[in-house]
Image (cartoon, rainbow, N blue to C red):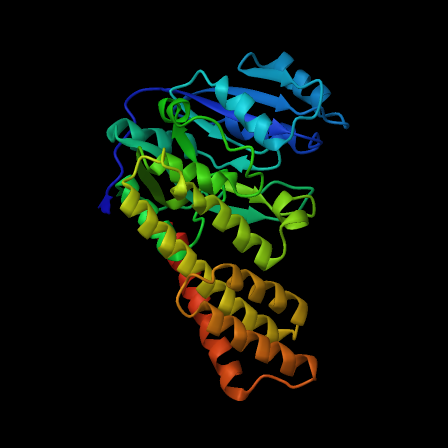
Length: 360
C-alpha cells in the first residue's frame, strides 16, 4: 500500500457515465444532472432503460433532447440489471467509465478526482472513494462544500484482493467506482450467474489484472437508501448476504483467474474462514439482541456448509446449543452481553477505519 498526495488533472479526459434505469423516472433527472455538472472532465451519459413500466423512458428521451451529451438505449423487453450493466458498459466511449444507478448521485468533482489519480498512475484500473448515503426520497443531499483534506491510497491489485479475502468483505458500494475503460473491456462482462454479488466478483477480477486506487477524504458518490433498493428488499437476511459473498469469492476457483493456483486456493481459504467467523459472531449477536432463533439457525447452516474449515462444526454445534436454550426462553449470560458490547464498539471502529481508508 502506498499513500500519496493528490496531483492535479492537466487534461480533460472523456468520462462515460452509464445510468441503468428501471422504473426510476422520479430520480433519473437528478442522477443525470450530477454527471453533466461535473467539472474538470468531459462527460457523456448513456441511459439504459430496461423496459421500465413508468415514465423513465420518456424522461430519459427528454433529457437527451435538451443535452447532446445524453444518449438513450431502450430495451424492448426487460433483461435484468446485469444485462443492463453490460449493455451500457459495452457502449462506453470515454477513457474512463462509471456505473451510476438512476437513484444515486455522483458527488461534485468526483470524476475529476478519480481521473487525476488514474492519469498519474497508469497501472491503476479502478478507483473508489467514500460513498455517503441519504434516505429522503423527495430530496437530494446537500453537497459538502467544506475544505476536505485529501490523499490517494494505491494498492497492488493482488494486495487488495488479499485484504478483501482476509476480511471476507466487499469494501465498495458501487456508485463511487470509476474505472479505466481499457480495464472494463479487458475484464469482460459482469457475471450473469451472480445477480446478487456480481459487483464484488467484478472488483476481484479487476484487481487481479490492475492496481487499485482510492480517493481519501471527500465524498465521491451519494447512495440513496430506500425501500426499493435491491439489496434491501431481496438480500436482507445475513446468512443470504454471506452466501452471496462466498459465491463471489469462488471466482478464485476458476483456473482462468490470473493468479497462481496455490495463491488462489490460499486466498479462498482466507475468505471462507473470514465469512465463517462473521457468521458465528452474527449468530451470537442475533440471540443476544433479539432472540431470533430463525436467523441464528440460518447462520448456523451457513457455517456448516464451510465444514472443511477447522473448528466450524464445533462452532455450529455450540450455536445450536444456544439456539435450543433460547427456544426454551433462556436469556443470554452476562458474559455474552458484555462480549456483544465489545463487538459493537469494534464495529464502530471498523466503520470509521473504512470511511477513512476504504478497508475495514
